[in-house]
Length: 140
Image 1 (cartoon, rainbow, N blue to C red):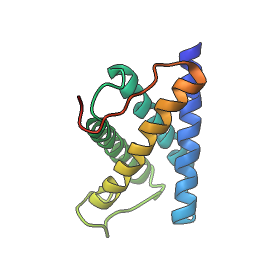
Image 2: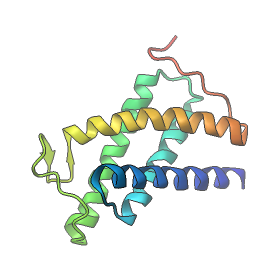
Image 3: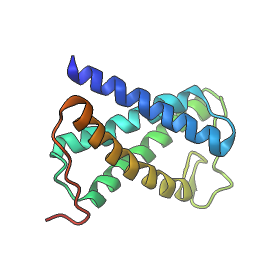
Image 4: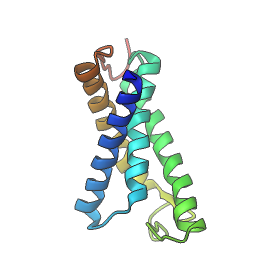
């Protein structure tokens, strides 16, 4: 039950943060972004738990950025291409792929991932008694 509580907490927090982030910077969002944001924060925490938070911070950010960008692409194909909900369109952005992902937003996501890794690691420690993360930029 503890693990389910952790996942639900992180999912709701990640969804709320990402939805709010979009509301502040875009002026609107979509419920699918809540779902996606939650999944991404759960991954930010889970990858740390899998490795005991022992991997260099830059690697954790890289893994999470790849995961988030892949999820953004898959979600974009589903909600924008298949469902035609037109949640976003990056066709006017630099180095986009089918208008669903692009380099500028991948860079922004890397910063959000760094914050997500830090926040999720410490929240899991403080609220659920998980191993305290010891972040190292380059490793030991």
